[in-house]
Length: 556
Image 1: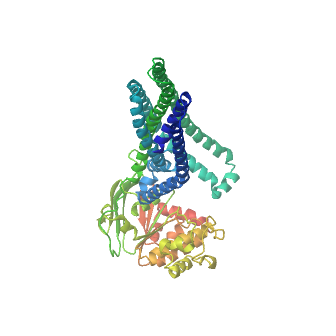
Image 2 (image 1 turned 60 degrees about the vertical axis):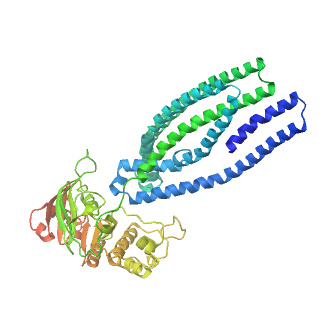
Image 3 (image 1 turned 30 degrees about the vertical axis):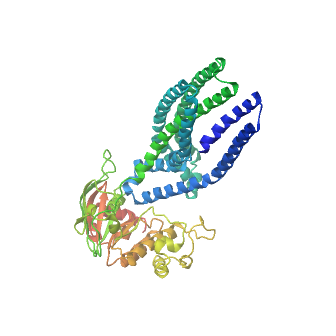
């Protein structure tokens, strides 16, 4: 409403003043001028108030959409969120929320102005049409041309979003790498500064090139807008001035209609720009909806009191994309009740990928994963995940309390159980205070664990789920890489003892740590090349025996 009243009042006010000058200004004229000034004052006060609360209103909306986005990312298929496509979609969705001038905040910001433009045009067009309807036709034709040009340019600008998101993702990764203090040592010691700067410069050049294209489109839009505006106003002014010379209107009416023409011109320009911008914002919001509307329904057969667990892989093959190479080929093995299996092999053999398939994080490209004879794809994944206690290579601690790092939302009601798990993991007295914050990110008195202590905290987390949450399968994917060989072996033995009535899969490059497992599976280039007990594999000329001897020579 203010968008209608303020321009109209600014048109009426000078016309009233000119009319008062050209004729005797009586009390009625003064009252009219005063009324217009009061309207402007009220509108300005109202706009000041709205502006003061708008930032909070917009922030509140952004927080709501961000919460939805983060919740969705935590629920979505892991393989999708890990892929380049998923990361780009997420980056686009994030950009459509964070930038006040694009996406969701941009559309919210446009709602009021567009409504003001529409109602303002209706009022102004009715008034100006009573004077000369030809002016209205000129405005409508030029507005349609302008909207067509703007829409075409917005489509071209939208085509830049995907490459812009890809470049932004790469820059974020590089900047996070440089900013992370854990990488600062390598950057200095290995004299990586110039090399890193060169990589960052290359990605920045790509991003700047995209920005230059966008700026070029904006320049073209501004030029076309200016040409159309000059032509439209020239025609309208010519018709109005001609009416004065013809004696059809008085001077004060000339002032009024010239003001109306400027007002309508501004409304048409704003409306066409805002409508085109609305289309652009709509395209940007589509990228948000593509991510949050992606199906992640957790459906399937419910698993209740499933104990014990047998997991069978039948001719499982896997590749990350249709065009890509196979990472795993024809994998067949069974994890029986209470069985302890070790996966060994060189880097890149496919061990971690295989574990992620067993956990349901990846779906096999070919073959099946059976849980007690049931296809994993037919099982409710959240129920299946309750059966697993896992520790991966790249698990992170959070800047919360020690207890929350172990049991998360159940920390307050399980303090004693958490403390037992911390003791099992071999942590000293300092780390047994479950309420003590970890890291100094959110608390100045937080504990900063070493690499080995951090891994013990993660393993305490695993122990809590295994013992107190009744998980049935223990999976350890090299979570002890920061420990020495002797500590690692002792650690694995402790956790194998904890899981003596559970099934277990562990991965380690140190073969001495896996020698006590019931079965050892040797992998190479995505295939199983050997399997057996430690003794049976050592009694023959196997690849496992060769690796074991090479490693043992370093510890003699």
